[in-house]
Structure formats: structure tokens, C-alpha cells
Image (cartoon, rainbow, N blue to C red; front, side, top):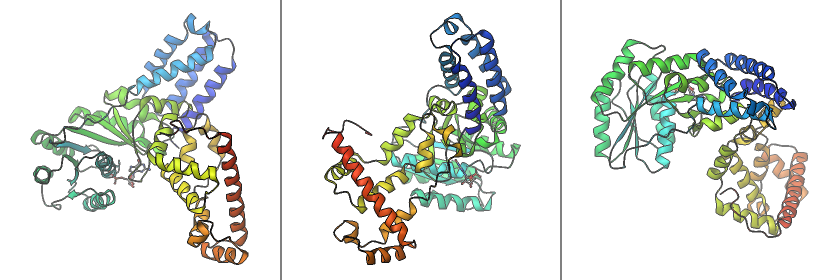
Length: 442
Ligand code: GDP
């Protein structure tokens, strides 16, 4: 999970700090040494670590902090604030041109960094915001690249412009913009060719596109798991062609966090988005403060609420609450609840965003497939059974178990759980005393 190993180490340092009622200057110095080691092991850029530790130390060893009421907490607060700053403090959004103009985003990066996938993810996000995107296949060297973009484009319902692999990328990009104009599209993603390493040809090609086309943003994708290499790649691209921002991919698999913590400080360019998985919905805006909270094990409650907001329809939530109250909650409703949980990214993902959870969860195996059996059981029921019109007799249980490919005992267990949770929900909504939902998730 993202930042796990760095997060664990920092939390151990903080635990020691918190346990002390009084802090001396030496205590802070010792803690800073440990923070420094943790950051270096996480592959954070050496210079960045040095200035970070200096900034925190300068603020933390003063009288005000050490003689304050809760010095341990004060030091942690300072670490958090400096970490926010390191990553840029505020979220940086890609501001698109007005809808009657074409915003051109040139996607660049090394091969395998996740450029093609990210172009589709971004196109999908903007399409959902009412933009009319076009994906343009300009990687004419890697034979599978065009096909991959077409597949991704189809998945997210965004058209893909291609001229095969016999034309110059610049000519394809020019033709694509004309095509976008003609078809009233207003957002063009140019998926350029990557290479295994930074090389002159690639840079020349990108520079040529930039010189001849009105590129609104040049966005670089880098793989978070490559740590300082990602930072070096970002520096080189920025020096050679100039970039407007970075998308950090594969953050879901990055336990160390070195790239996330260094890129802004080293290149001066913001991280715009974070790729959090292979699915085309797994792209999040990069919020420095929320990332710092995750790294410091303080959870990320804001992202959690947003996920819930996106997944849960307010009307449905109200309807569901009524059902709980009247105890008319049936198997169809149960299934709908499971779908919503899935839409929110699964239980593991959700728990990791809760304060203090990520370290506690390390040894807990989350069975993300646990929901599959109940679903299969419900799917094997008749419509009347699902809405509780037909009670589930022993012979029906046998039929359902066969249909779902499970033992009868599992059907029994599920039915018992269902009854129990129904009872509990009824009690809970009773306790709320018919109080109106005020806001809640939305
Ligand atoms: P490109 O060569 O830069 O265009 O890279 P691709 O878009 O082909 O991505 C390379 C691989 O990385 C593919 O298998 C993607 O599914 C995977 N990938 C891309 N972004 C992410 C991400 O945010 N998380 C994870 N886990 N995998 C990703």
C-alpha cells in the first residue's frame, strides 16, 4: 500500500516523541536524525531531506515548542506542515481553456511509466465533467501502442485519432487538431512515444511538436516506484522541453514515497495527479496535505468522504434509510449496498484512509473477495425470494446453494447474518429517533 514503509518508520519516531511529557533539545535532535534516516531510506532526494530537516529543526527546538503544553504533538505538527510545503501545499489543477477553444495536452514520459493509461484516465475524468476529449496516437514506434490506446479509448468511451505508424508524430498531431476542430471537440491528448531511457531523438521529437503546435500543457508521467530515477527523469524533461506538471503513476505500489516527496522540491513543478491502480478510474488529484497525512499515518478522511460522495447517491441513501426503519430491507437492497462499497474501491482501500488504520492493518488480510459469495447466493435466488415474498424453505436453500456453487451451510450462515444485520439496522435507525439526516455523506 502507498507509503507503508516510510509511514511505519515515521510513526515509530512520533510514538517516542508523544510518550515524553517533556522534550529537550537533544530529544528533538535525536528524533530528527531518525526522521532523516527514514526519508533517505525512502529514497527522498538528499538535498531535499537536508533542507527539510533544517526547516523542521529550526522551528522545533525553540522555547515556544519545548516549553509548550504538548511538545511532542507540536513537533509532529511542524513535521506535517513542512511536509505539506515540500509537496506544494495546494492542489494544482489543470485549468482548461473555455469550451469553444481546444486545450491541447501533450503527454510525455518514458516507456512503461503509464503514459497511455494515464491519458485515457484523464480523458475519462474530463469527459465526465462535460468536456469533449480526443485521444491522439502519436507513438509510432511501439507497434502495440496504437492498439493499446484504442482499447483504452473504447473502454472509457473517448474517440481515438490514429494515422497508423507511417507518419511523423508532428503531422499526426496537426491532423488530429484539425479533426477535433471539425468535430467540435475541445480537449486533445497527444500520446507521444516513450523510450526506455531519456534520449535525444525523443526530446527532439517532443520539442518539434511543441514548437509547431499550440500545446496548452506538457504533462510528464513518471513511475513513483522508481524513486529518485523518477525525479531525475522529471528534471531532464523539464530542462530540455519544459513541463507544466507531473503525474505520478503507480503510487498504489509505492511503499517508500521518495518521488512524491522530492519532485516538487527538486523541479519546481507540481504533481498534478496520482495514479492509484491499473483501472481507468484509478486517478486522483494530488493533494499535498492529504498525502502528508497519509504518510504520517494520520489517515486521509477528506479523500474518504469524497469517495463516498462520488459513489453514493443521496436519494438512494435516503431510500435505504427508510427501508432500514421499516425493516423492509431485502436481498436486492443488500446487493445494491455491496455494489456501492465496491464502487468506493473496496474495504482495504477504505480502511487505509482511516486515521491510524494503515499501521494496524499491516497484518490483517482483507479478503476483498469476501463479497463474492453473498452476491452469488443472492443471484441464485428467484425475484420473489429476493424481495422476501417467498420464504426460503430447505428445498429452496439446496437449489440456491447449487446455483451459487457453495455449501448449504454457507447459505444458512449468510441468511443468519442478513437477519442479524437487518435487526441491528432497525435498532440503529430507532435510536436515531426519526431524526432527519443532516448532510451525512452529502
Ligand atoms: P506507457 O508505455 O508509458 O504508455 O505505459 P502504459 O500506459 O502502457 O502502462 C504501463 C503499465 O503500467 C501497464 O500495465 C499499466 O496498466 C500500468 N499502470 C499505469 N498506471 C498505473 C497505476 O497508477 N498503478 C498501477 N498499479 N499500474 C499502472
